[in-house]
Image (tube, rainbow, N blue to C red):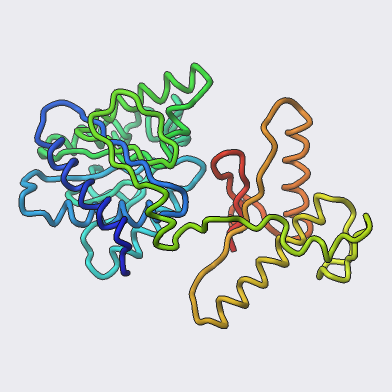
Length: 321
């Protein structure tokens, strides 16, 4: 794919700083700050490809990619697609590892929550000696440097629960990566050796992020004089405002899908539902209600086999089709 100028600049800077940090002893930390919608995953994919192809890098490298809320699945799919032709790196889940180690130019994808528990199968001892600790031990025995990539790192750095913080810190120490790269639109800067920042103005300049947002487009046609005109929607059985907003969002998404197809553009629009900041049970019931509407009326849920609903950052529900 054709990279934007700001993406190429960020990749060059990531490569330069990562190579320099890998030349030092001890674990180093690089923070990659890039706005939502700037193509952060694609930039990371191209950076990793260039890193393993760089002749100046004489070390054997492997990678661990950790992400929250099952976003590691989406990241793995994106990177596998990106490396499909070059075969620069192999993408694996824990159970797919060969010889119970991380091989050279291989990325191990993890859901952070799944290993950030003391009783997780990846952590606890077993007769097969197939846990993260043993995998890392075998990997290091081959002289391989480990690079830990923490996607959406603000989730972990901003943990409010003390036990969660302790578990996250223990896991970082256990992995003991030679280089940790924290990627986020809103990173929490602490004990950082280097930073790479993509400026939002550069992203807007190249049309990746729009300078304005249209709020509730078309609602004036649905609500007139305080009345809901359901003939403007495909679903005529609207019970309340929550169902109305979700139905209108689905209608707008369908319009976008048709418009993109007409232009011959392969874009699959997502729907993001912003949730209120949690104060108590009222907000929990609101979330449950919205998830119930999505499941009952639109067949969208987090259940295995559906997987069309995920929790995003900043109290959002993300609908993927």
